[in-house]
Image 1 (tube, rainbow, N blue to C red):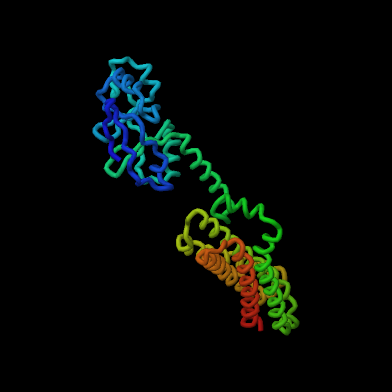
Image 2: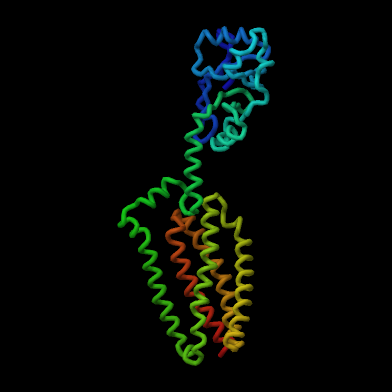
Length: 336
């Protein structure tokens, strides 16, 4: 969109370009605004503005050729001496964004600059139009709603969050119950697994005392990792961006809780082999829970499903079963 001089001596960007795109600053630009060179006098500018013909007369864009170099608010024109030039009364270094600047970034630029408008320029630096504050209110409101939804880390927009909060009971059940039923089957399977190691438990009842601790710690470590990952998804961060840091964190957490529990169990019960088996199982379950907590939400996201509904119960199921298996496998190797 290049400025075209009209018969009033003021220039306005031509509005015949269909290059506007949704989500970009250019989609909010008012193109029918007055422009004038910096050597034009205030009185000449007011005379030409009084002739009308422009949709918005709030700012005069001062241009050199087609490039905007300043802004003159209309109230400043009326308070300035008529012989002064626009170059002497203009606000220099005006806030400028390119036509393809994201609308949210444009809104922030306007707020940061404390300006009454933004100048939008085309690929060659020529004036496209002006964006005024009232046009950006809806952008800021939508962004605010989206950010508030992201704080929860579960849904990508506030409309989805509101829908999930207001959905009827039957819909709530449909979204949640299938995964909880899977979890119930997992609990049944864990009971079967415990029964498979009945002879070991009868031989050393102390082993049964530590099963809740193993299962709980595996789930707790997994929930922390999964929460961080789902919130990262909401912020546009991918699994690969945090994978190794979370994995190393899981290893370090496993080492620390395993070491602490080893000392506690030895002091409390005096059975070093059982304490060692529990410590190794805690380390292994913390590491594997971290891995599971990253893989499942990633898979759900790739499948287009909300990772908050399904990956939590499914991850808990896998973590519980695996931690029991690992625990008794280690017990069989170390204790018996």
